[in-house]
Length: 336
Image (cartoon, rainbow, N blue to C red; front, side, top):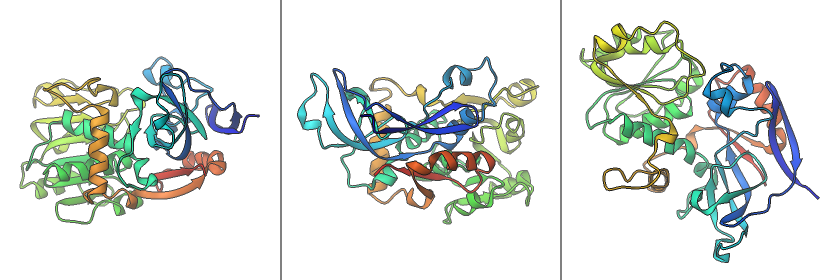
């Protein structure tokens, strides 16, 4: 008997719930009963929309039928060969898909050793991405930061930059729901380009110096050239989100060479595979830091949860996101 409901994109713009076989853990693996998972709206909707170039890395990753999801929280209920039975019952997080039962290797598991609500732990994957992006962008105490796009990645990046000592932290978006979720405390400034001239306001907030670092998190390749207008000469632009296509007619003289900008890629896979003395910040180390921030009250992700849905509602909900994602940030899927 199957009884393993799994979210599947059979083809672009189609979502179904398939009852698949419960997987059996192999050597070095554990079987996990999912309790919560988080929709990564940017990545998952890019695949679901099918709007990426056919010869791109997106196309290589997003092959249909596609099983989405990589922010999974649950409990270990069985183990494979050469795995200690003590794993059974542990709460863990993994880069597993939206499915009631999943397997993961011990090597890739994150052990939840803090008393943090599962809904909040589910943000861990995006937390790791943002923390890595901030390190690659070398954000320093007292620097100013501009963030284009206030989805989950943008919201988390803003909060981490503030914790790193950046001031001011300027968030730019046109969606009212996202602007309203931007932190309301000293040092944070939300801007709506449809209501204010962004360049003028940033100049005012930075005393004419403009920002030291810009984070691109909209995923829209056509917006990127405009994002340089708030960046100081010799500043850094970090591509933290994953643009869904090429940026046409990018002028490397005017937008890179002449002002001597540094353009930095910050994909999650740029984490070091193993810790070294020079760079100990692996994904697992960032996971530990992420949990510490929540546990100690330094980071509030609960306020970013906009929806909680049953896995049974997922197919309809994904299609509604295709129509309008502006009011959705943290979407938690409940599996029990």
